[in-house]
Image (cartoon, rainbow, N blue to C red; front, side, top):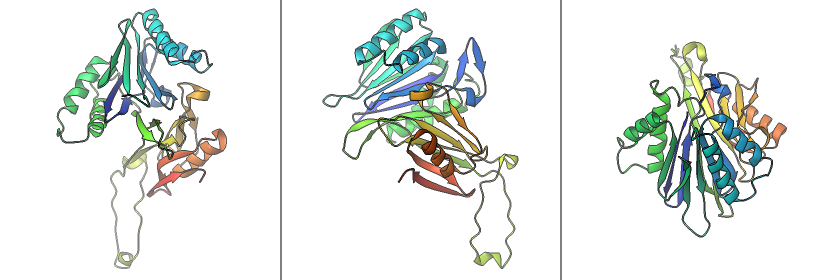
Length: 299
């Protein structure tokens, strides 16, 4: 199924989704076969889907062939596809209004619901787990941080197999011109695995970098980078130990990942994306096997 949650706080919108595919016609457990579920349509519109992928892909095909040219057309098409799918494909939409409060739309059960607080679509069991985790955190903690932590608990829960793989987020940001818009969220997570070291007296006066290590010792890592441009929305994910990265760039590949191999260095991976697709990426990367570096490509 999948799970997507969205919330409005302080006139900002934050979404979280997974990328698991459990379509009844195509069950795939490989994370690299997962699909993007959150799409930044333009700087002020983000849409997500859960359920039968077939109807979502019909929508994406029409969207990226410029058949849906207005917000009203987009919402109406989602409703028609929800009805056509017998409610097996549901949608959510975030809209940032320049002169009014942002809005969240839910297209489910053959109707459109509007909210100025929060919404969810997808796996009910996953949402129940999310709610339980979210409300267990300190009430004074930042709401968006609690969302991220709670969603991560759902993805880690093996009792909810339909919600897993990549954790993708979309957030509201301001440009240098102070214009508001949607960008994909940034994230970096490294696990060094179990390592032991022997340091002699001579070594104590030297700086000895601790390497991340490989999968053979249980080390793992993942870094998320996003397009630096509101007008070129994309999210890239790099796996240092796997020496490859994936790029979700809906404008040319809709919901499928583009896999780029032979990329042990995160900065090299980001530069390869710039070279091939002209996308400037921003985020933290694994560098030289032992360091984390913040980059913006093309500077």
